[in-house]
Length: 117
Image (cartoon, rainbow, N blue to C red; front, side):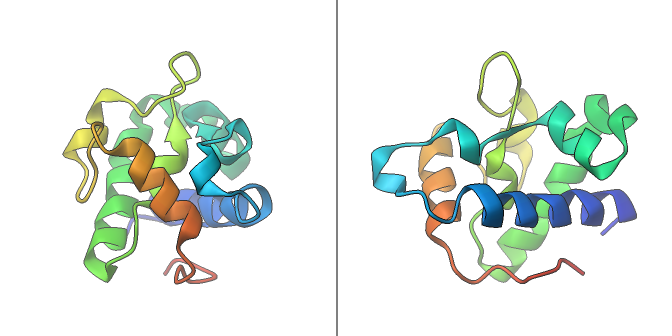
């Protein structure tokens, strides 16, 4: 994985742990579990990545798919639509049609590592 994808993945792991683990996914997706592309890139300290974030999120999706994990990148959404961008469907294991289920699976999954490497 590229250094940028690793950095974004690490921030997503921390975000999920801090904001999502206590959520009951059967109650629906809560705003605190979602993070916008721009907020994610700013947290990493690379705000200029926002327009190209999808490239790095696909790397994260690929790693999740290869390991049999739900897509961690499902937590990242567009600021306006509060849904993933158009490229989400092109990421391994990701489908806009099943996005809500993928977020629920991400919230309920207990096998993510503490760090992506």
